[in-house]
Length: 178
Image 1 (spheres, rainbow, N blue to C red):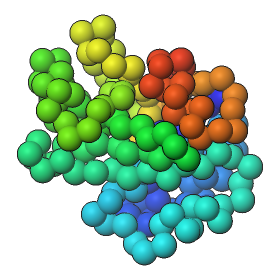
Image 2 (cartoon, one colour):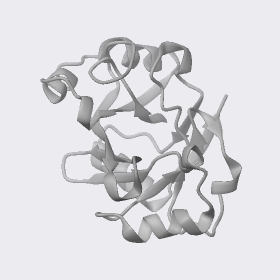
Image 3 (cartoon, rainbow, N blue to C red):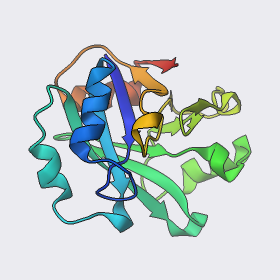
């Protein structure tokens, strides 16, 4: 099942509605989408709006968080029913060396479960290394319909948000790119 774990909508800085973004992924054959709008920009009713989506896709609420001690580095928090997934976002955007990525994994305010190996959907191979001791995910970080479907993960098919997040934490997925 194709999964997009980092998607923005017009509920923060994206250009399109949650309905439009989710439909774009559905049209490309995705089975799940995490809407991860920027927490500091969120419009009221974010979670209610996502709960009302009727797309046939598994839609998970998430937030892209700023961690101030890192000077604007982003973390994703994706919520299941019981499980929560935390992802270190696009280290290439910050020109981080592997040692600095690992330092951030150790100093984060929560356990970081995965690291993105993409920047706006483009593969950043240097971060897909065993030197980083957590699973590596691909995402397109789409803010616009033209960015949808550039990169994703594939997990065993499930309708359970918690099983999906557990699969990511366990590294039970493959990366996909256009």
